[in-house]
Length: 208
Picture 1 (cartoon, rainbow, N blue to C red):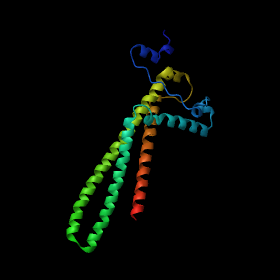
Picture 2: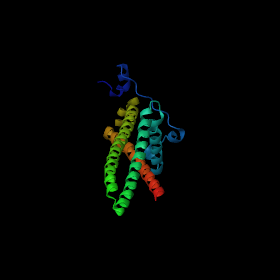
Picture 3: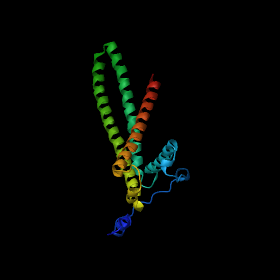
Picture 4: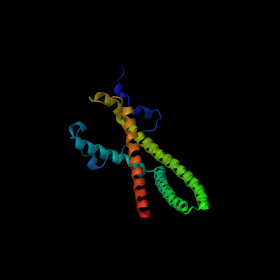
C-alpha cells in the first residue's frame, strides 16, 4: 500500500505544472505570534486575522501587474463623481422647472421637459456603468485573492495535513469561497456607498 503522505504538489511540478506562487513573508507584528489561534483571546485572534487579511488583500493594488486593479478603482471613483453630478443636475432642473411653472412660462416648461429626459437617460446610464465597474472590481479582487489562498493552501501539503488536525475543518473549499466573497464584496460596497453619500452631502450643502 502506498503512503498517501507522499502525495504533494511536488509531483505535479515534476509533471510540468507551474509551481505555486511563494507566499510573502508577513510583517513582524503580524507574524510574531506562533501560538495556535485557539489559544489566543478573542480580541487578539480578531486582530491577528484582520492584520493578515489586510496585508494579503491590499497586495491586489500594490504588487506587479496591478494596473487592472487601479484602472477599475479609478473608473469607479470617476463614475461616482458622475452620478453625483447627475443628481446635482436633476436638483438644478427641479428648481428651474418650479420657477417656470410659477411664472407660467409654457415654452420654458416644454424645453425643460426635454432636458429632463436627457438628464434621466444620462443618470440611468451612469448607474448601470457604476454597477458594472463595482462588480468588476469585486470579481477581479475575489479572483486574485482566491488564487493566492488556494496556492498557499495547496503548498507544502496543507490540504493533506488538515485531515490530521482536530477541529471544525469540514468543507474548507466552500468556506474559503464564501469568506473571500464576503471579504471582497462588502469593503467595495461600503467604501463606494460612503464616498457617494459624502460627496452628495457636500455637494448639496454647498448648493443650499
